[in-house]
Length: 309
Image (cartoon, rainbow, N blue to C red):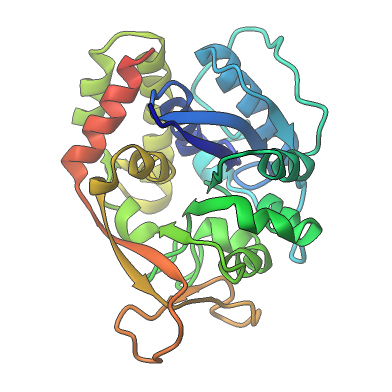
């Protein structure tokens, strides 16, 4: 049976944690490793979170530390949503799992270059690690199946009117990746704002009553509390797992092929993903953008993923 080989590049983060959970045990996915950068919290904290998640869920893959800061701009983190630890709400057992000694960029390059099959790179945080890998070894682009990312929006941002958090953290990195010539599939706020962890979703997953459901339930309760304080949402948007859900079931999202340009002007739209949904500019199309999501199917995928533990 074909198993899609993936590298998951992330900045855990409550929603990253659920993406890791979903990818870690699915029979159709071969998770080769997890690479980490700063984003939702500092690199020190996101790295520890990734180790803790893998140890708790018994996901035996390399975890590699990567970029501690963006390529150009200053570090921006998100404690208002993810808390002081970056993953507030769950108490992990004592940590024994260790980081892989390789830098994340080195791991990405080596893994892709040494693979006989093309590899899918999933990014659920800033795209710094992948962008640097593409610059250090451009040949990796030939062996990337596709880049599947949570980030951006063709409508409104969530940290500025124009920009979504992941892209805004490192617009220059996103610019490099979107202009790499690789197949780019973008799952932005336009769809992720539709998959809200409402109270009935928490109750549904809690009934599964295994280690993953306890993990999901405790994290999502704190995630929702913070989303309510910051955005007024009754349920937090579970952004990042949309990428993995799509790899498991392509029917979960509707996609449009468009021209997308990352604004790196450092003006008021800095970090915006300018998606020409209506093809006004007649420019070469370079990005598949998610335009709708089957919400019921999404939660079925999440539920099925939790049950695998």
